[in-house]
Length: 513
Image (cartoon, rainbow, N blue to C red; front, side, top):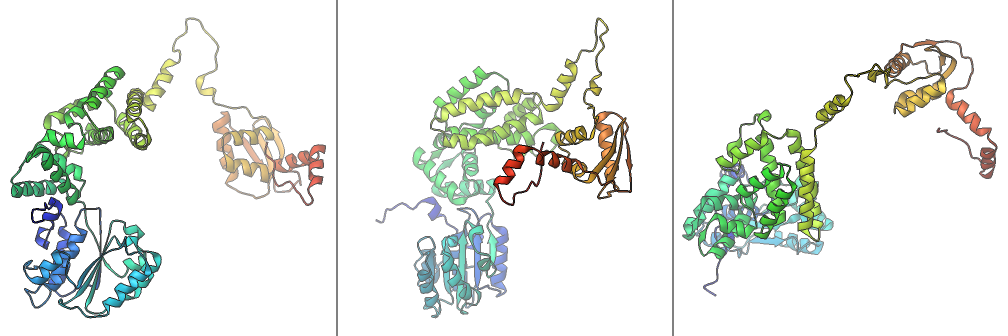
């Protein structure tokens, strides 16, 4: 058992605050708190997997209990009995609890009962509860009181990847720290250092691929590096990593997108067949295409973002993208992005990803080839005949939009068709029409809304092309509104009367025509 291999993610786990990479704010806050004696009774660490939540909890436990100092120290020695036992997860006073397998209230009660007793070999009894969001509601409730006022010798450290699932009552009793995704450049430096320690060869291109595939997680990146070393025997290059990740190199992706945007369906599908035969993972290829679209958008000249140097592409590849951008619009990039985002769940659910991807390429080409809305408007206006060899009497195009309104019924119908619901409702329910004709309306307004006449006048002018006169009277003529008139007609219908008699107490509350 002495020759058992230790994976890189465990072998190079951070053992002190100085080696905790990518979490500068967290390190500064905790070290300052320890040095000044402002140690909280409960902490909660949250962030994506592999950013150092459990490692930070262990380092903090060592800092509180290191025997190299008479008090808590921000620089645990790592050599004393307590430090070694905590690092190995074997210290009797530092309990690491997996909340996923200790979800019940009985498990929590056992922990809280044990917390009442003073530590055996350490200054503080530390409880590290990993994936705390997995606790049941009753277990959280049992924890509340002790978490707020624990014994002086007890420190709680909670860790979770799902902070939203942790009750606010728990969060309010803890100091919260959000562990950030580790930047690509920081990961590259760390992986290069690990490769040097392991005496293996790691090319810059392979290191770049591993750091980006890690997506901000140190553990994920080290696991990928471990796999690449096992695959290559210690000489990790770009080709080996691409083959391991089933990814297509970025140069191929750039050229593929150039083909897709060239409006040649046959060439694009042939290129896809070639990439697929070479073993590319289509899900990863779609991610690479989305990455290309994102960076092509950021590099679009009109945006002037000036950050192309931070993109994952070489100088030659960036020049190719700039040339592609000269022949496509920003609107086109936006459209193909939307199509690719919609294709992600389609590809995951498909039983034949290759067929799904073929159809995706066809969609992308046709979407990219579609003219923008301004171009469509120009085409429509250009399609109108500008000259006639013979004089023809036609209605002017700008007059075709106007409507003819002869009575009150046509007015309310026009308002309803135009989706002017507020005006439609007001005219139908509140106006008693006295006169209607010759672009003039005389009426009594039951609500006496002084702004109404102006709104209706503007709408009539815009939609009939004529100026209307609206005259109100202050004396109620006691006439029916249009809604009341329609209702009266319905009530007078013999069929409606028979239907009303079938239901005792029924009444007509509205009429829609």
